[in-house]
Figure 1 (tube, rainbow, N blue to C red):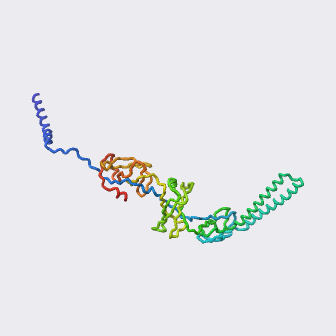
Figure 2: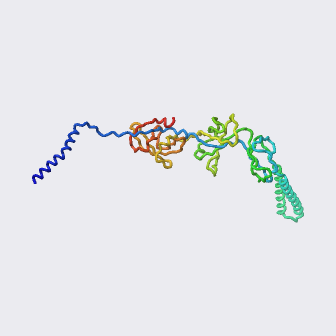
Figure 3: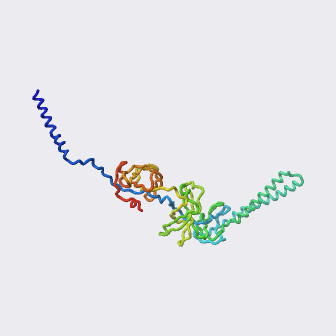
Length: 362
């Protein structure tokens, strides 16, 4: 038993020997302390003014500032239509005529009814004088005679409107019907523009933009047909009701006189600068957004003093040219991570690798 106990003591001493040697050796080695955490390299951009919110970009179609939609006051068959689209006309020129036979027939019918009512009124008056017709019968006869006379007068007036006369010097923009076609009363026959050479760009604005613009707001219009040229314009009319098909409000931009000759139907791009500006917002590159949902997203905001990146919730608005407007959650001048954010944790130290101005193209 004593031999076995002594054997265990020797074995314990032999086992602890390397451990004690290691402990003794460590006392002579230099102390390094905790390893420093390496900062994650990232690229950042600085939140700056959302300049694109101060302008409204829109596409529209050129139309003459003053145009007339010409029609017949009465229906019938179009006997002649002597102009083509693009023709120049003078004031007083006869542009279209109805077949007079139908109009004359209506006039004869109305006149005959008026003559018959007049004869009936004369007869009733004679009977009323002799006491054989009541006052009510006389009144009915007088009313009938007045009504038929008015109808005959309207038919004679319509006979004068059986032709369309140019109300002013102008250019035929569109023919809505062809000769020998049947046209209803008031249906468009021709669209005529005057010779003022004044044009407008007709555009449709969303409700949020329509509420910002006002008559007189400046705009700039460009056309693919005139590369490198910009035409000054201003808001001249704002629709009071939205188009039920598109939900947009019709706005007209009067284009200032220019050397180039515009044509009705040209498609142009306009940039409107409303005098009524929206509340100041900031913008950041779209690359800075993380986990966007609806109008909310997350970004990493870097503290320039400590180099710590904080995960921050923001509310975003419109996007334009790779930038997104930040409605809430961020202030101008703050730095956001645009490269490397997907690998960061909240509160992690970062090392900025690229200047923000270069990233934002400033």
